[in-house]
Image (cartoon, rainbow, N blue to C red; front, side, top):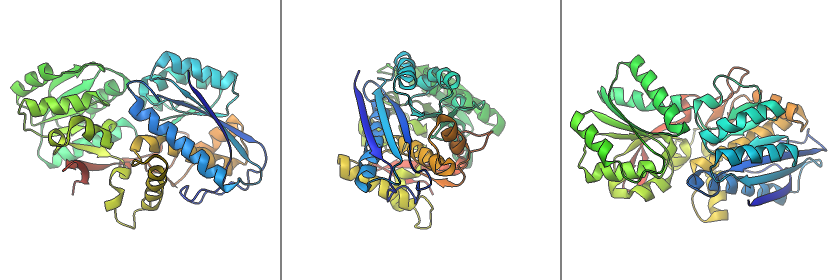
Length: 383
């Protein structure tokens, strides 16, 4: 099991929106990281880990503020829920962390929640499933917008396009099951008819059987809910079968990796809700997130030679919430960090603008997403 441990002095970083931690002089903040760096979910965990490491390097270069030191201990869960639980326990019992960032997936996060709640250590999940934070759990937060927000974005767009009969194709993991549940509930409220409800396994490599069945039902559109590689396979199969109806994807594929895996030709025209990082270069200058998004992308590209991804942004936001919490409370204990995270208001981040409350431990709304369409191998906002 690979372990990466880094120690840093927290400084005012140019891309952390002006946070000043001078009030939090002295002491140590020890952060644990649980990311799926390898394995099927590595497209999530690798940029999360790299983002946190980048923040460490940037902060070290600034020399720190008033002696407040941050130590980050990062473990690779390989996307395995059992390992995630073991490593969460290790972070708390052995490494004595004050807060945990991650895990990368909904299934892992749900498995780790009882550990965080029992040990009274705040957990900031990098996964999207609504059940992570609803119902509210005292010690659990998350940075991706809830999947019901993404589902509502899709259905709002579909309604404007006069789409009424929808076929679902969802993966049978925690993320897919949660998304399926949210879409069906919202569809019923908004007057849509679910005419097909198909599923596929996380390791399936061909979905032509499900799509052939869907084609025979003749829906107005297909909504596929999952994370790669499955959605990329679905996109290829849709193209191969000559299905020409609108294809919506979830925010779980909102990175260039999806277009790369599916192929630009097959992905052309696919629509999905994405965080603003995917289209920051065409956002109006007045958008409150633009400056931070540009600086994050530039820093990530300088360090790793590729553009920053929405998924890495989830770890960025967790770090931002922790830094803001330390500033607010002036301390680094689990209780102080938890309280500070819950007090975050109008905090501009990669994923949106966080406003946490005791009743909302996600703090994002519909403004966190923009509907985008794949056009010539890139994301373009849908006007």
